[in-house]
Image (cartoon, rainbow, N blue to C red; front, side, top):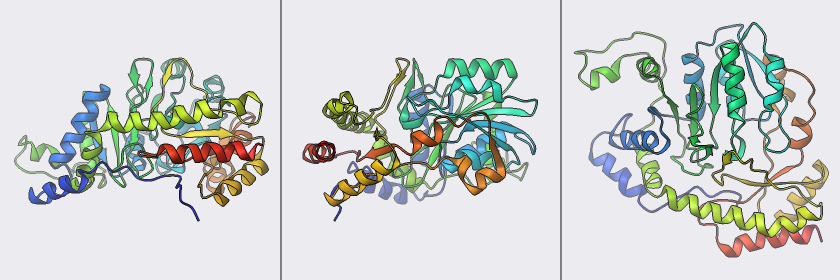
Amino acid sequence: MIDIDFNVPPFTGNELKYMEQAIQNRKISGDGMFTKKCSAWLSEQFGAKHALLTTSCTHALEMAAVLADIQPGDEVILPSYTFVSTGDAFVQRGARLVFVDIRPDTMNIDEKRIEDAVTERTRAIAVVHYAGVACAMDEILDIAGRHHLKVVEDAAQGVGAWYKDRALGTIGDFGCYSFHETKNYSMGEGGAIVFQSDETLEEAEIIREKGTNRSKFFRGEIDKYTWVNYGSSYLPSDLNAAYLWAQLEKADEIAGDRMETWDFYDRQLRPLAERGCIEQPFIPEYARHNAHMYYIKTADQPERAELIRFLRDRGIQAVFHYVPLHSAPAGRQFGRFHGEDRYTTKESERLLRLPLYYHLTQENRERVVEAVREFYG
């Protein structure tokens, strides 16, 4: 029986109170009071000029693909080691995916492999900040600038993490956040798109509001709204935003609690790494991570499977992560791997995520560490 879950959605205590307020305000659909509070918080905290809440990070990525003007036949470079949404957003626009290898230290896209994958059809680079650890953005922005490419940051795991002095998601042309129940801050299902361009705002609002200029109508800028372009319903309910607001109010507390767990795991498991039993996460000097996850790497896939069973028998749920997209049926249909898959598959088969969530008790942290130590003798 599992009694230490891999994830427990964050809950601070004010979620139901704020959801009740939203109901009392008689505005529970999109862009209500709490939606505006959350959007303003994201802008202020991370220096994003524009932040729009969405129904998911998937939808934020879909919006980014439209705003980047991805067309059928265009190519988008991205890592294969990512969630399907990173690819889906561009496939829906008719693009071909070009997967490149990852760095084995950070599990992020290898910036040294990107330029060789650029062709005359390349239109964008989609980077994924795995585990809230930043990609090498200066090098990636340099490549994008020289080849006139858009940069979309899949920062689903990167809310509250930084590259040098810039928040993840605010560095490229578009940044996409997730507030899924597995993330540091949650609204159940939800996300956000952030960007700096004033010229993009009106188009983004139209796409998000089912292709209408309804946002301008609500601001009193026009006397009626109408259908003006392609769009969809990407607005989350204000009930979801109210749930999220209760956590953003305590963002520092949640971040500190998660970091305590991350640091404890890292200290206590270091002797195993020094013995060569496991590998620990690597944080480059340019990155300030957000304790989104703590993973270890085992020797190989059979050892990982054995460790998962060992932990489960002791009531601890540990999980592995993505199966590389290029090995999936849809990945083969909609894309290709450029260059050698030196690390993507091999490293993905070794990675194991340990329980990490807000209010994981010290007793349970110690149980996890002791179980891993026991496995390795």
